[in-house]
Image 1 (cartoon, one colour):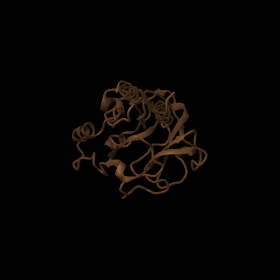
Image 2: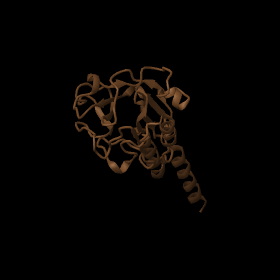
Image 3: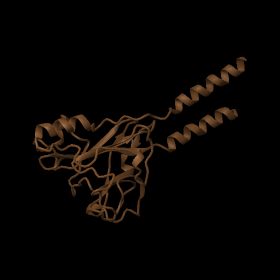
Image 4: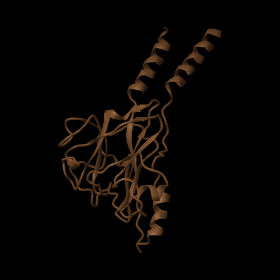
Length: 235
């Protein structure tokens, strides 16, 4: 193997090793029951991710302890570029605020534990986390653990936030520049009209679909390396 091909192989291995699952959208909406309320995860890598290696939890009202005492371990396989949506509601119950009634399809998962609100932080872990989460690896976070989000730059009460398209990797510290934050009350109609609020939700949230700029695939790098090598041999 030439040095060039060896480098390309190393680059390809690095891309696979750095497969990323990120928090890509959080929503705390305004329809009856404070719904829909969900968090979206996205696989920004070029390969399928086994979700069973990850868990997600929330830290409510400035607490440093996970809601319910533990994170929720995920399951299933998530293809490259796909998103996974966890809805915080009591299953697929009909009603104007339910996830299905708003979006016309079911989320990938329901979380029947403690509900979250727009002043709570979400944490994505590699492994299962309990207590303060120090027994697992924090790979991504929305908000600041141990801080009540009320009045903070990341607050999404009755609102939404989504990850900017250029962000491909997780970040264990919330960074404002990685997010577009709709802000508190960004999904609320001052007059309390559910029809207007439904329109705001549909216009500003996109569960199951996250736009991002993917890294070049390993196959693309190898093909490019082969083309360069062939051209040099002909020269």
